[in-house]
Length: 324
Ligand code: NAP
Ligand code: GLV
Image (cartoon, rainbow, N blue to C red; front, top):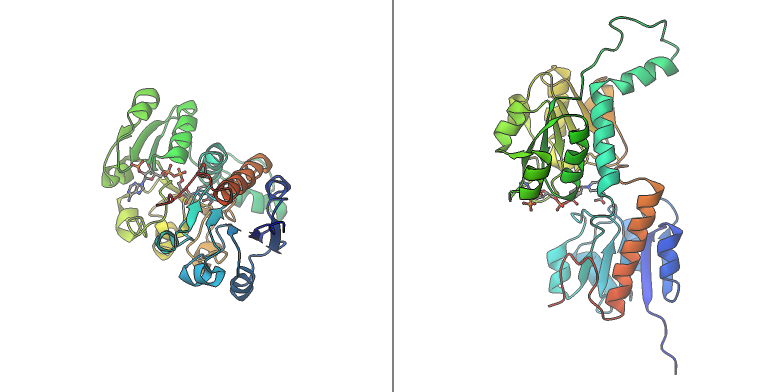
C-alpha cells in the first residue's frame, strides 16, 4: 500500500513559491491572513510532521506536545527565532530552522529608511501635508538633522548590522559597533571600530539595534542607556521590541533627551506604547523590516526547503539546532 503524504501545517499563508515547493505533502494552511488563534494552532498541529511558522506563532512545549511524536521540524519563516522554545524542541528531537542571510539587505534598507525619516522628520512632514497644514516653503520649516558624515553606532554587528555599516560608508559616516566577537573584515573594509556599549551610546549620532532577542539583550536599552546618548541622537530599532524599554524611550523622547527614534518593532506587537503614539519625534513602522516582494519570496522558499530537507531525512540548510 502506498504511503500517505506527511502532514505539514503552515500556520499562515506564505508566498506561493514556498507553498509550491510543499505541493507533494498533505499541507494545511491554517490562516489566510491573521495569526491563527492559539486554540486553532493547538488543534491543527496534531499529527503534523512539520510546521512552517512565522514570528507571530509562539512555539513552546505545549505546541510541540500537541503535535506529538510525529513532529520532526519547525521551520520558521524569519531569521529571529525568539518565538520558538528551541530547548524544548531539542529535548523532543525536533529540528528548528530559520531564514538567515536572505533578508539582510532589505532589513538594512529599513533601518536606513527609519534613520533618515526620523532625522529628517518625515513622519511629521507627511502628517502636515496630508492634513492640509502646509502653507509654504519656510527657512526653518521642519528642519531636522543631517545623516551624512555623522557617527553611526551599530549594536549587534552580525549579518544585518554589517549590511547597515556598508550603507553608512556611502553616507560618509564613521561606524562604531558592539558584538560578542570582533569583526576583522568589517574593521578593515568599512573602518568600523569595536567599542563598549557605553562608549557607543555616548559617541554615536545614530544608534541602530541589530541583536537577537535573548535573555542577555532583553531591555539592553533602558533609561540608564538612553541617558548616555546625545540629545541630538536618533535611536533606530529593527531588532526586536523587548530589546528596548519602551516606557523609558517614550520618556526620553518626550523630554527631548534624544532627538528622535525610528521603530519597526515593539514590546507587545501589534500594540504600540500609547505614549509613543502621541509623540511627533518617533517614526513608527509595523514590523516591515524584511517586507519586500523579493525578500519575502526568498524567505518562503528557504523555510519550505528547510522543512522539506528534514522530512527527507537530510540535513536542513539553516538549522537552529542540529539533529543529535
Ligand atoms: P546575526 O547575524 O546573528 O547578528 C546578531 C549580532 O548580535 C551578532 O553580531 C552578535 O554577536 C550580536 N549579539 C548577540 N548577542 C549579543 C549580546 N548579548 N551583546 C552584544 N551583541 C550580541 O543576526 P541577524 O541576521 O543580523 O539578525 C539580527 C536580528 O534582527 C534577528 O535576530 C531579528 O530579531 C532581527 N530582525 C528583524 C527584522 C525586522 O523585520 N525588523 C528582520 C530581520 C531580522 P557575534 O557576532 O559576536 O555573535
Ligand atoms: C523578522 O523580524 C525576522 O526575524 O526575520
